[in-house]
Amino acid sequence: VYLDSDTDIRPVLLALVASAEFQDSAMQKVKTPVEDAIATMNALGVEIAQPQRPDDAANLFPILSRLMGQVIYDWSTPDAFPDVASAWTSPGRLLGGTRVHWNAANATLPATGITYRPPAAWMPQLPTTFDHVVDAVVREALLLPSTPTMLRAACVATGLSPLDMIDSQHSLLGPDFPRLMVTVLDSVEHLCR
Image (cartoon, rainbow, N blue to C red; front, side, top):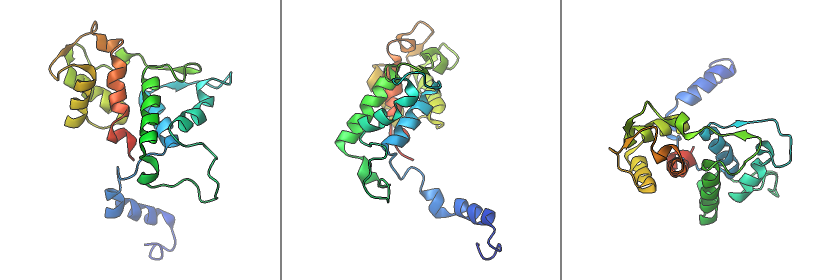
């Protein structure tokens, strides 16, 4: 393609994206801790302000990444951090990620220089059933439809069943919401790329 297009890069990129290898590569790699920290804040739909203090959210990404097992700029050789799943799937990495996800879902870390979406902003038209809430939250956070596995995990985490009715007074719009959100953030769909 490269030579056939007289070295024009556009047809090369289009051919790469259209290739079976490229299509089959989706969700085959585990996000690095840096990618996970950024993807978590993106999934939560937070607004991060220009930092005014050292402990503002914009300054804490290196700390969040370190809590998950990757210290930015701390790779001793010039070839950069490994980009293979085995480097980022240790128990410590997964527990660190779960801790960061829990704190972010609870809007506690980072706590300053950031605006979190309130639980009501994640809800579809209420009242509705819990399965519809899960699907709406997953679609909003991950830009994917919910899967049966995600729904089962959300049911276990919240103690709700798929057909439980959720209205504007339900505890899911308050103290129980982080359990649902952390289930989404700890899913394979969030952890892979």
